[in-house]
Amino acid sequence: MKNQILIIAFAFLIISCKNSNDNKAETSSTNLKELEVKIDSLFNSKIGINEPGAAVLISYDQKMIIGKGYGLRDLETKTPITINTNMRMGSVSKQFTALCVLSLVDDGLFSLNDSITKFWDYPVFKDITVKQLINHTSGIADYYDNFDKNWDKNRIVVNQDILEWLATHPRPIFKPGTKWKYSNTGYIVLALLAEKVSGEEFASYAKKNVFDKANMQETNYYSLANPIEIKERAFCYEKDSLNMWVKADGNYMNGMLGDGAVYTSIKDFHAYNNALQEQSIVSKKMHELVFRPSSMAINDTYGLNFLNNAEEKYGAGWFLTKDFALHSGSWIGARTIVIKELDRPLTIAIFLNSSSSDTRKILIEETYKFADEYIKTAANNGYK
Image 1 (cartoon, rainbow, N blue to C red):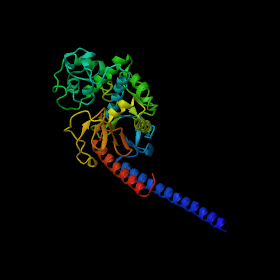
Image 2: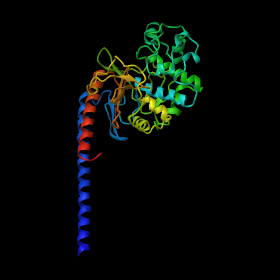
Image 3: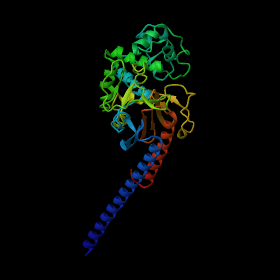
Image 4: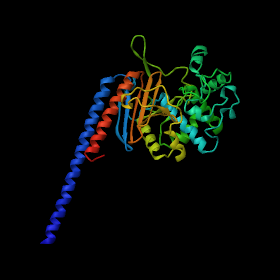
């Protein structure tokens, strides 16, 4: 009789646990659906079904909680954006350039404290180190105004053109290491450096030593001067004087690599985010430098509400606050932004194939708010 009572009690306990787990699973599913509805409503309110669009990733604890596309990657074929659509990253590309450099440091080909004059004995590089190029404290001159005013727009600018211009010793903005100023030129030089010391074309080196290691199977640097096929490519769009969408992929500055030019998808970025979490791209020592502030405090700010006006510094291809790592990208026909929480395993990425900084800001703030609410609800209800 006693044994029968124990058996019944044990069976009751199993059933209770099962019911509890079923209830948790049902609650989790309901909350996820609510999150999806909120994200759909947000993106559909900003992006028309026949317009250039966006892709969004919400990743938590290495799981793709949300991965969706809205709008079109090609207005002519009416092809929609999906998680496999490869979109132009703009300056979000800088984190991949930084990883290429850290990979070469791993291989012992140079150190972060090496002077750039070790590789090119140009006056413009005097007292500038690899580390200063990475964290934007080099003071090196900006190439954009010079090429915008003086370049033949029928010719595509490539990295070598930037190096030849630097050989003319354009005036530095400030003495290296004394201030911070965001520098696209610096990241072009880093790509040139990676190419020089590795003996490989930069795009090829990045593919083998960063993208492949991160399982980013369809991710590439893209130069208009040496075009390759980009699978499921999202074309970039701007509005013309008649308020009509037109392709904007043929700009004469789309030949440079390093400060921008990466095409990737939500699927590949999710794989990359997991590789960062696992520290599997470069050595553990180099991975630790990615999210370690290496510059002085920055006057520029993102102005996002959830940052709470926190002090920003720069690491290796990421802006850093006490709680977040983040970076945005802006180029002709493209806007991107990625954020990572440093205490919770939450990452959000939003890629757009049109130019609207206001839309990007609204989307990231609202998406973060919805993701934060979802995660807190999940924790309160005892599920992940």
